[in-house]
Length: 77
Image (cartoon, rainbow, N blue to C red):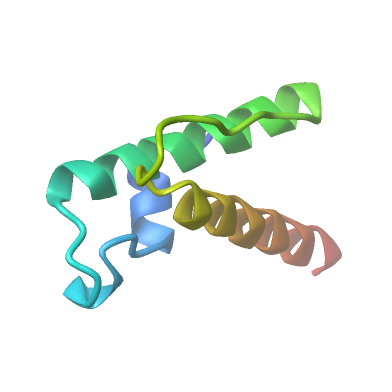
C-alpha cells in the first residue's frame, strides 16, 4: 500500500502543537518526506535521508520509525 502525505498527516503532527515554531511549509515538507521515505523503504528496503541543516531530518526519521512500528503492529494483530 502506497502512503500519501495526507495519510501521514492524519497519523502524525509534525507541527508538535506549535511548540517548536515550525512553519507550515516545513511541516508539509516533513510530511511529504516521511511518505516518500516509507514508500521507498517498502519497495527497496533501504532509503537515505539527506538535505541541508535545519530541514527536519530528525523529525522525519522519527516519523518513519513511528510508521514502521504502526505497520508491525498491524501485521501482528
